[in-house]
Image (cartoon, rainbow, N blue to C red; front, side, top):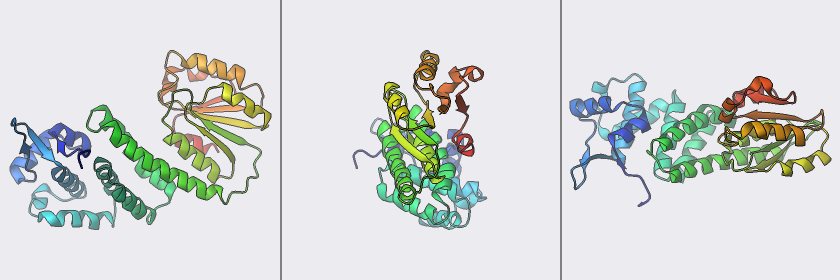
Length: 299
């Protein structure tokens, strides 16, 4: 239990729940919803139970319950009411909160239980779009504000990666490939953020295409030999942090000269580093996409 983050500042609570610190203080003073503790040096903090309660209170409030009403509910009944409402509607918000708790506690069982509950309500594709993408966006912000540690982020993303792999394998085991197109998915040197690319791979496979997933940190030279094996290749890559702004134009030029030597070869790219490029000047065999969904729609 020593690795678990169990002390939260009011700023941490604001970052984790989206509730302003000013509002938290009002709820605390007016309705006794939270009881902050103090360190030996008299610094206020909130424990894990307070964070869990605040998540539940926020969920009820967002679903039409007034704070004055929530304050009258017996504490042990609040989680029960949350689960009851989540089973009826707005399951996405409840699931995101559960995944946050599993991350903060390094609780694999809670992650798996939440995921299995979601599978009863929606297909994996919807879980990724409606739950995982908003969750990962929040996690990125929490990491940037030092509310969580890199260990928390890696714990959660590793579990999500497992689910993408399992669902992709299920499709591949039954796949009969009839397309002449071959998709080659990779990340450039020193790029390690592969969850988005892994889901794109899942969608490509689900649509019956041949897909070769090369993964993280692949140098351009390693892509050249593929031309000897396949006639019609679409390379797909995700530029999250690499190549850097000052290097990305040179990378595009090198890719065009070394890889796009055949008219049947294309390069599809997406990711925030594309903001450093003038997309109107991309080579004719390259296409930029603003989102995963935009790329999937093109398949």
